[in-house]
Image (cartoon, rainbow, N blue to C red; front, side, top):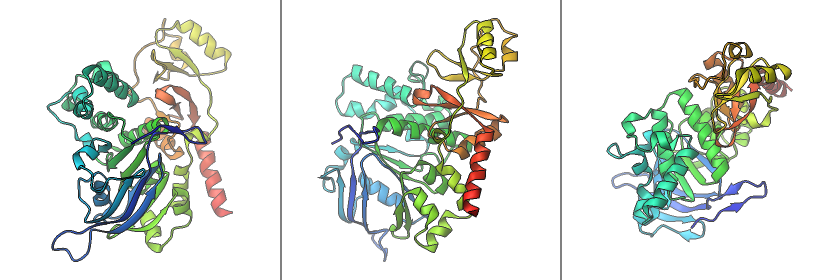
Length: 388
């Protein structure tokens, strides 16, 4: 059902298009349908965010895509295939599904949770083990450390990463996400959003994501659907278009105050010119690293692990007091991804009381450094454009 292609901009697309034709859901005893004849087209490889007030039907519509809720009428197509009458169990094995807290089975290890659907599909043990380790690495969890752990031994953010890995286990073309990051703290939520952006950049799945948070929709979505009661599509457009030109007063009210500052969430870290830091691997000779940093005129060094991932950001003065570069991981290290927004970068700097952030790219390797002056310049530019 899925086929990996490369779009003109060289971005990999492994998702398929979704088309809804008159999809309706009526519940017995209710005068009005919960979902009223929705027509919608989602392009292959796009992330589309469903937003709207509680009870508007967005989650019901999402669950009809994998037939957790059966439609009362209409048709659902994945690619050119009408899946409306298909066996629902067979269909669900071809669609990833992520909910709050990952929905992990507590009595199963992380590895067993991830390998569940491939096992149902008849994959052999060796293939399942390879896929499990590949996905743990993809979501930023060391397979050697996490595959044998149980969900209760994980933080909320780690559970959610495993939930995403499990949803991707059988390489489905479509990923459904029902408010997956709603139950974690703001900093963890930002990191999970960044992780999803990075994964999507690499895999190009078709993602349908339900959220109550319009800022999250702006950050993650290629397109946003704003629903009213009955899953009426009030506006379906890019985040930029919805912020600039709300289709109705209802949309403007839903976007809320501060739409101008929300424009800052449209600017990605990747859109700015990053500073190239001096890097060093843990265990390197400190004197050599200090000499390298001094020659480059740098006061700080980004220390990485054996796989090029940042673990600390010590000053040159700190390194002069050591013989070898420490392998100690700084849990408060301010890190954002290339797909993070400038708003995220500023929040991360403030939370860590730092004047900059380390930026990571593919597989969490160091891509550069962003400093607060660049973010403030972008804010000033945004305000200037608005006044103009």
